[in-house]
Image (tube, rainbow, N blue to C red; front, side):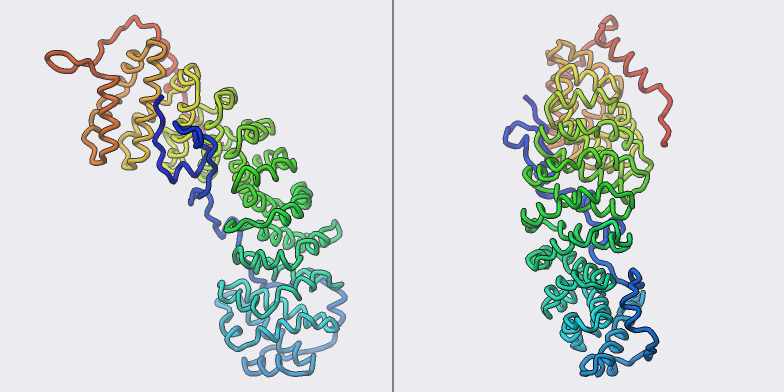
Length: 527
């Protein structure tokens, strides 16, 4: 049986059905850069604090009536930080925090190079002076929001353990600032994330979640938890994931969009891996709520919920079926019509993995009426979206039954595929040629290959395939040559001829009628 020759990098992106049975369940190890890139406008790795946190009357009372000098020189800050008087230390730490909180070009390196970080870390331990603790934690939060080198300066000064201990501070403003600082440290990468986890931060973070805390505090906790789920080289340890999943499940029921967004991002990171990691999320029961959130009008919720579900369907047939049972096929076709092409692309990518499953899953795709919007995107979609749709069709043809492939032809898939044979992307051209070859083989099993050949000819496909025999890419040229020789030619003594048109062929009449009824319908408008 013919198999679609997928490039190696594509095979890693979705569960692949091919000639090697071991590849059929292969997980994505390297994810699609466009889909998986952690863009700052989606979820920030680190965040500086440039505004005041939740009001804390207890700590406000400690500084009531005290007036400090607003601006200090760097040398005055250095002198104050190294003073023995707690009031002078507080004044200097606050001045350092303020310059680190300026919106543009904060002098992070200046503070690091001045040697202030170790002293600020010491201030975290000043339990008798919570305002000093807060200012020090705030300053360290902003330093840790910088480069990896700046974050490393905070970590190597020993900040993690005292910050974890501050999570239990009786002063909310202090514990919230500690949460934020730890979130920035964990967001730097797997190395520091694991140091935070090993410092027993997770139980302390979970203990802070309650209905009584301000929403800004809850958002910071959720964001920090998402950073503790982030990065996969290596993945966070199973023990840590097991600790976080119940609270993430609880937070997924929240109504605040920022909380929901960060929970969904956390689940995206946790499902971006092996079937075993996917099972941790699926078995906890997240899918029904994720499917609800896929219908959200807010992109910051829709994007990570869709991506998480897309990761789940890269898993086993059983995991994919659980996602189908949760209702993903009632939402994905609508998302193919979303006004944002990025959402269309992710929806098509998810559908390509459903289509990579057994023919029962493909039948469920057909039943949810996914073919018309897929064909519409093949005709008019952004090219990046079209490529994902082509992979969906490729998987469909590779795993579907003959009857299912005929339904694919009836949906009008041939015309846009033929038109896309003129693109410059050689990998996609080869995939399209393989799809056409596969459809011709399926028609041959019904003894109706000639009719499909004639339909392809009417669409201009034969001319385009013949032209591709001269393509500069050897594989494109060879694939096109094989299609022409195997399906469109009859060798005769005096040359080569195309099969004659049989106007009375019932199969051709049916294909033509179905095909024309689709292509002459009014174009679907975007919602």
